[in-house]
Image 1 (tube, helix red, strand yellow):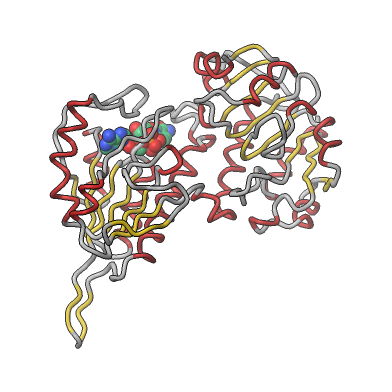
Image 2 (cartoon, rainbow, N blue to C red):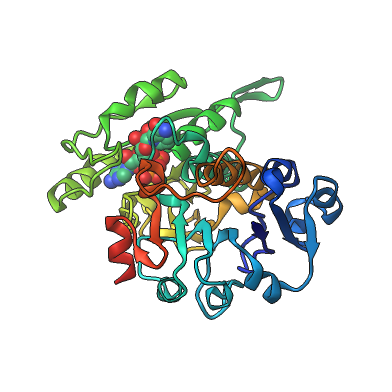
Length: 380
Ligand code: NAD
């Protein structure tokens, strides 16, 4: 079969779906890996490196889409090629593996149905131990958490660590992390490594132990339980939201940096930092809103922008993993190739097993028929 890797066309995207090191395992069993020339250029993977590992470099993008049995991409765009992949060009029955933002209706889904595509949205891979090597949400969130802290350190007009110098003692910066999932825990670890005093809050009390094991203080604003299913948070009720705001306002006023990562799957980001809280922060303080792509955790965040509001720098970076494209591609590629192995026999032939919980969990459609429950909704 032909496994196709294209250059991503989305404006913010620097990652590539498969890196050269993972090509040898894919060509196993006589398969071909076709890589569009320049696909890895923005993440530091040259055509030459792909060739050396056994891939074929192609330049006819549209022609390759017609020949592909499996398309592995970072993002699956709309059917009109606005993100660079025209699903209508794929041959009937082809397989597509990509991040597809599957929680909303997407124009590509109609095209996939029509072309009898089997499509797998990697964001829906179950968060189970067996699926860990395929978990793109974790691998990308981990990078976002790390990079978010670096953004904040760059923007804060203070140092992170305590320093005792002949010219005086510098007190450490106070970093408050909101949401202690994968991104939040990495943000905590990174801020600690840089020497800040770190605290964190999450609606799931279960994370307290993990926060403390990283040497940070867990701030328990008691708003009642908000444990959802699958280890995720549930959306707070309006009473819980109000209580959360009241409890948080004074605390936020006393920190130098807030890193927000709070998310509820498929829902807009919960608004945790009000403009009132921003006003309470000291001039020069920084908010890095890592939830900005889904609307942001801070009321005054503008996705993709860095601005000063009431003297506080508020930054809502988008597609943060793409800013560390080399590493992000390496991890994403490992996630994709591990998943692709689930869809292949020992000999390397395509064999989709919808009864497998991981395959079923992220199957948006199988030969054009709706896959799991979430997918049925997405397909309309
Ligand atoms: P996420 O990105 O969905 O959310 C980030 C964090 O925001 C979560 O910890 C969530 O509780 C928190 N949050 C949501 N609403 C909030 C609010 N109003 N106020 C404060 N915090 C709020 O989460 P994630 O990082 O993707 O992790 C989700 C779950 O998956 C976790 O339980 C994690 O441990 C689990 N997980 C399991 C595995 C595995 O077993 N293989 C791998 C990765 C993650």
